[in-house]
Length: 92
Image (cartoon, rainbow, N blue to C red; front, side, top):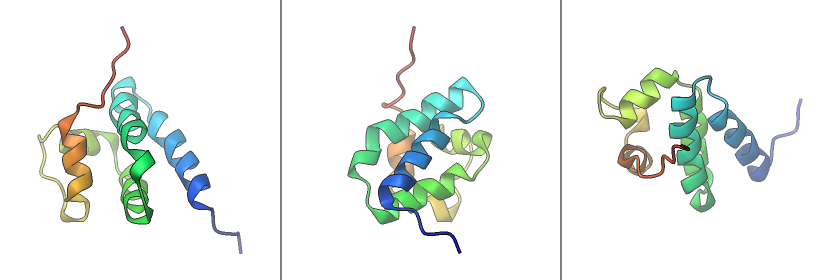
């Protein structure tokens, strides 16, 4: 049985997954959210984000933009922070 990853290793994997979504828009939104908030995360917040990374980008972006209702399992403080979109830094 493989050894469980440490919290720091899970953060590193989450960062990679957040910044390699497949589209620049999703990278900026999901990766930018990770960059802004991961430093204050504990186990529950990281677990939430890891679950979010398993979802389709179009759904995550729609929840963040409030164009689709957020499923109950993702509702709470984290998605409310994501919905502020003040963390998206678009290079020019």
